Amino acid sequence: MKSTMNKKVTGLTITAVAFFVAAVAMFFMPGCNPAAKQDATTQPAGKTADKPAEAKHDAHHGGCLNAIETCAVGHAEVKLDGDVMKVWFVGGENQTDKAVRVSDQQIVLAVKPAGGQEKTLTLEPKPNELAEEKVGDCSYFQGRADWLAGVKKFTATGKVHHTGKERPIKIEYPEGYDPD
Picture (cartoon, rainbow, N blue to C red):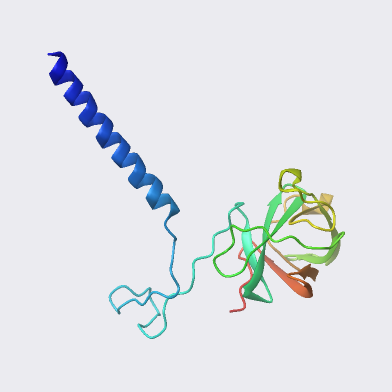
């Protein structure tokens, strides 16, 4: 009896471990491979075999991605939380899970809510001390304004020192900005 029970438990344990390993492996598999060729039967609508589907871009903080000049340069992930605008600077292409530090002490945006007047919002750095960030070497910024509360849609423009160069930034919320 004991021998039969041990075989069942061992078989169940091996099956559970195999399932767990497979699940973990699937989690770490890339979401897309822009270099992979697809045939006409696997193409998304509007794509052809000689024009592969675009790289997958994920907003890892629950916001929307806005390309900085182009998707290859990098992105600003933007999220509104009540009267606070949160902005994470992240990598280009499908590297949106990688933080990109910027040298700005603050970032000034001209924000135009849908149907409203343009207003100025100053984003302040919020360094991640665990990542050894500091003001002037930071990937996360916040700006607070009473008029942001209840805003559902806006556009914003400004400048940021991203990847060693001052670059224009354009934000379209909540859709995101992608000039490519």
